[in-house]
Length: 224
Image (cartoon, rainbow, N blue to C red; front, side):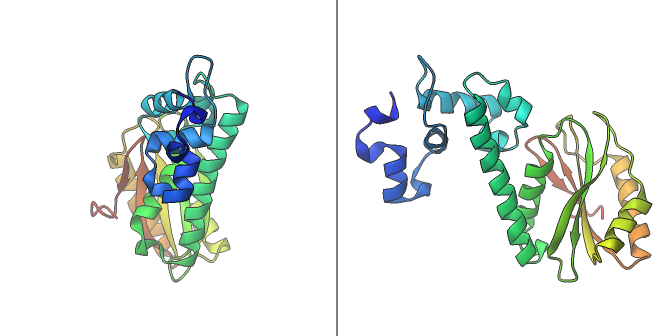
């Protein structure tokens, strides 16, 4: 069934405007964004297939451009719209963290880092640089690696913190394998960076490991 074939009160756009976005199911929200389906596959069926393929909305939001391009039915226009939504979500979270201390909303920090890192095909080491009130100054990718590892140079992390006049940092990196469990190497790196940054009065508040569908805070594990 197409959207136009539905009674007016059941069409996603009209339903959203009348009852609010919370009244729509995931499939309806995605169908509203996609607008059209394919020959022989209505927009609701396409939305359902996409959610199944990526494991739900979270998986879809963390999908890389190449992953979206590999799915039948997602042409350039639809891919551009989905990527725009992902970027809007990332920027909205960053804006909120610039206005309030990051640990006032730890889940938002995890969501932001997942949007930034989860879809990367290679390992990326990044840092959120914070001011004295622990509000976000900027987020930067610092080092890029291979599929399985990256080299992190403490001197460069310290240099960026000083240039930005940061008072604290949240470290983060992704595991392209999908598993977010911190390794022994992650623990040793955290300790090294914590010591190096402490020499210039910059606190390491957390080291977040991002997998696919999972985000682990090392601070919550008592590892920072």
